[in-house]
Length: 579
Ligand code: FDA
Image 1 (spheres, rainbow, N blue to C red):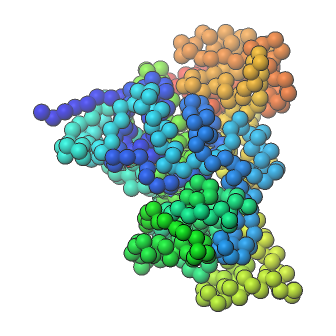
Image 2: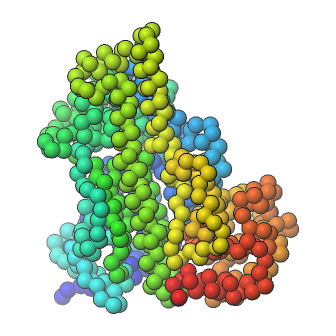
Image 3: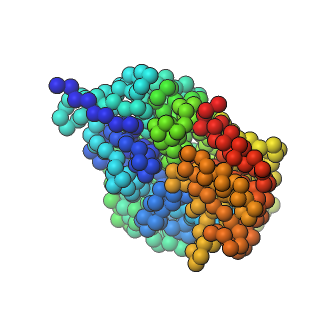
């Protein structure tokens, strides 16, 4: 007899997108099931840079501490080093990932969380264990085959690889979090822009104690300018720290037109030897795999009851470390909307805002990541290392920068400038935090768009304008110190107000939705001892912010309002898709 299993949300894939969708849905009490192709989670490090926004998401989902405990901390991430090999000449460094003193201050001001380096093979178990612990029905060795949708749900055929048979899952909604070769996205007919296979790349995972070349300049990334390093790949050879300082991953390019080289252990070892530059160090090759640099994004993330998240809808190189971050944030955006629609609180129209909010982000990060690859070329150009790429020429040019000539001084200046420009890849705080949404789940107020006063890719600019993430400010509650972000989330809408905002509190309490209320001010449950919230909130004490479950401001009213209940009810009607 053909088995039919029922669930509310079926998730295909257990990578960062699928695992975090499962975790968020289970946290919100939504019945969900994950099917995933293999018998294990990611077995290689893959994505690793975990930015502040993702850490905020993980904080809300209750796994931040576990991630911090397992991750490499921010202070060991931050000297992106350019060299001819780890043992060779150093060409310069970029203070990275919030480790520049000014950027570090910006990170502290922007969020209660710190970024960290959490390789994917460590991250996935944290997300999946927590999801299963909260109720996710998780099925390894189960492959998505096809779906059919109707007015009431989606019927999905999956294959159980252990038993070798197929069965059917009947779900109200389907999430395709099945990665860069997403079959769900293909079957849903999601229109894609851009192109796949722009360049060829190889990952080589290996063990070696490289502390003598790395511990004094702790970094996640060591970039190697060497002959052949501009062929394919991600801009240069890369030695990436997986665990300080004896687990590593090399990224090395190949000519995509010629096809991937034969990934023998001997080949992998030769690449490791070239990039490390010290043949005396014992090396154990763990694995090698070929992949391609892609520049592709979906214009639409959904078709009816089928939604895609993560690499299924945005495919790009690892530059800027945006892959798993954006995937987690996609799922976090979608999960609360599914919850409210499944509960009958919101209209299905709310789900349309998923594409409206996340597709522009996907497009932006695909573009940024590929631009970052192109921005490595000036480092080579400064050394005249692009033409022609003979080892002798490159080494001679690199050596020439030590000369006491005007030409060498110019070369040094060009090299410094080219390396410094790489902040757009390694310290782009605005890329991480500046997403602002425009959709039907955001009620604009009458204020003009503040835009950005500084470079929006480098600098985060908080605002409480609807569509922006709630600004972080430290509050106190009794003896506790907590972030404004800690007062929101947990799957609920929250209304923030202050002294004089009683009408807003009453209006929130009158909503059947169950809105949490936060009153900030002297003698209230929350106080603002530093005056940070007064400075950042952009409302008067008697004004109000309505914050969505994902921490984004949905509605703002700068002052007290006599008709607070009508204003809030109207706003919620719009946000929840009831017209
Ligand atoms: P992800 O690809 O992680 O997960 C897809 C999931 O779907 C997997 O669990 C897969 O088994 C499952 N699946 C696929 N088809 C299925 C089907 N038909 N049925 C059931 N399950 C199915 N990024 C980075 O920033 N730095 C890096 O160095 C690397 N390196 C790297 C190496 C390799 C080998 C890969 C594959 C990827 C990277 N990445 C990376 C990219 C990064 O891993 C990626 O951006 C995120 O994992 C995206 O997360 P997703 O959950 O969207 O897809």
